[in-house]
Image (cartoon, rainbow, N blue to C red):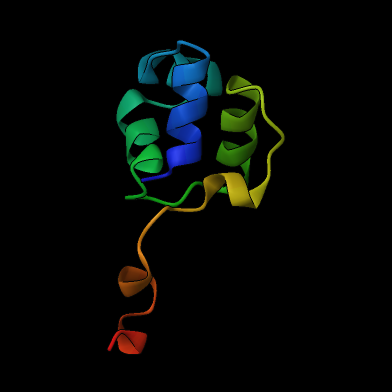
Amino acid sequence: MRTKMRKQREKLCLSQQKVADTAGLTRVNYSSIERGRTEPNIEQMIAIAKALKVTPDVNFFEDFCDVSYQNPEEVI
């Protein structure tokens, strides 16, 4: 889950559909990006950032997951 995206969207009281429409995406595509199931390309990142009124920063699009998911071989 890309929690920064979801929190910003909720802060602006926007639905996934509204952000998708503003960014020129389908709601399904936007939802997949917000949930971390697909990676946005640079054009999508810029469009989503504009729709969410944030600076297009790679850190904004990072997934939030626990350490075991990021580096499973490091888990003891």
